[in-house]
Figure 1 (cartoon, rainbow, N blue to C red):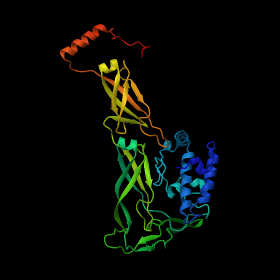
Figure 2: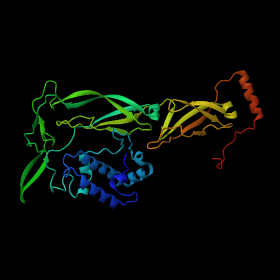
Figure 3: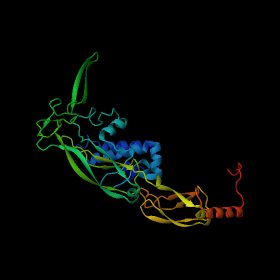
Figure 4: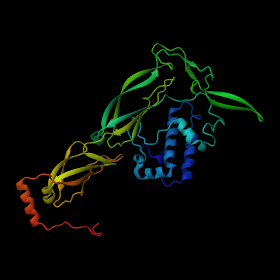
Length: 365
């Protein structure tokens, strides 16, 4: 995924004003009104807006500077779109949020001087699904197949020009006021700005001329994703009347694990050990988050509550070849029942140990 500063053409030391000026320059250059039906220009327009959404926000910019794309909920998956915790912007999002950049209201074009004329160049609705992942799948990365149902234009459906707006995508109303006639344009309520409507529809198609198509989608989930991250698969969503599909947004969820608790890129395990092991130490095998096992050395004299760290045995870090750590919290298991011989051994042990039962002082605490 391209660096956001590079996208806007500014340095990491750029001021807020420099970032704003650079974004406005790019927005003017790649604005859809200036580049009609140019998918590459539209993509650059969106990329610039998404970069500006992060770098113009001081808190988001700080997290991005420290952690990169992962710090603002964005990841990387070449060929299948990106992750995004808070950035997934449509053209309407851009014009509504950054209209002030363009020198007017969100619906004004700084090229034409008025509202954006003509039918709205949009796409079908996005599909949003949740994908549950085990800790082992997250640790290793995995390829998943999922079934979705999306709306597509039914074969044989008749697409006609909207009679309400005559294909313009907007309707104009005239009001008489004391200042004279006032004209205002608004989105056509019947075609929702597309300039098209459904005419005759084939059997089995819905009132919108669509039918549901079931498809199996293959998704490659990279290692290290977190709860709330999502992946955008471009063009895998519902179609509009023109056949332009929206996107498929896959939101990741973590399944609860029997032993482990996740803390960012680290994994925590609470481990019970016997009293002899705590006294004499030893080496034991414990499960790891990737489904394997690893040897853990228990030092002699370890105390209950002490945490041992196994470096690099946690989850993979996004945009990095390193892993977090496996943290093992030790709990000493005290048996509830003892045999007569075991009781005698414990009593002999007690006689040979100095008593340690005493109140803690403020200094101890």
